[in-house]
Image 1 (spheres, rainbow, N blue to C red):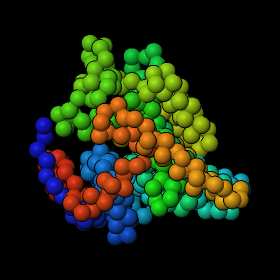
Image 2 (image 1 turned 60 degrees about the vertical axis):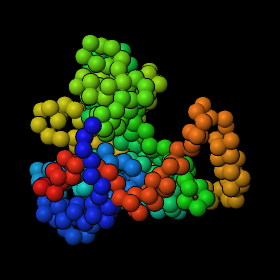
Image 3 (image 1 turned 45 degrees about the vertical axis):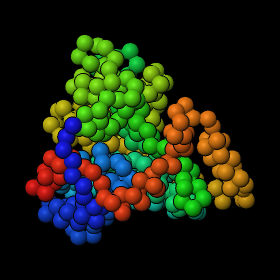
Image 4 (image 1 turned 30 degrees about the vertical axis):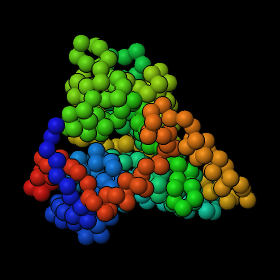
Length: 341
């Protein structure tokens, strides 16, 4: 098990802001990016915050991110808009597009923004929370490089294409799903490997073609299994097709081919952001519906005593509050690497 160290969220954000400025980001951009990374870390997602700092800084260094750039409007039709990311920061582009979808929903009841040529958005769930905090049902997804075998394939030929859906709840206690189409995301595999832990269920294949719970073995073969087997595989393909069609951008196979030909990191992604305003259809009794759903989940007899069933997103606010008070545990090696970047 890797040695860990505790850092406060404020310290992480301060250090990341300094590093972003050092690598070319302006003060405002550095503060915004660091703030999003910090919230993702506080919410317990170090795989797409602390462990991805080196990656985002390298993108500033090699020109995949151009400091100060913002997405550019390509076309629009009522409640639907298409943007080109214009080599802007992935987290800033995605935030802008989800906020724009919410603005369109305020006007039309529903809004959709399609984004092409995007950089990695890091933790997709952040944008679901962003929409839900504005009282909107939020739906978003991204395609990725080819990092998941389609059902029946031995090689990675489709993306794990994370999908996010958020429904606003009372007092900020939203329903938020953030799920890759693989049984375990690449980030989760990395976190579990660093912690020296096995996966709770089989997550992919080892070099002998056997299903395994060992995360490092799956990382080596690049053969994770789709969630729901053929169902997750099909969902991945459809998400990729819809994103590329609506954004008029690259599909996962093309993204992978460009990476191999040009020797670059993952970029030119397509992302979709949808916001729906529940108030547009008049009054509703969602308070009662929400209470019913949550009670049905919480009142269910647990498989294991002391481990009750939870709705998606339930644990986030508790994790966030604790992290803000106590800080987070991160791999010491990773933290030292960040300090030296």
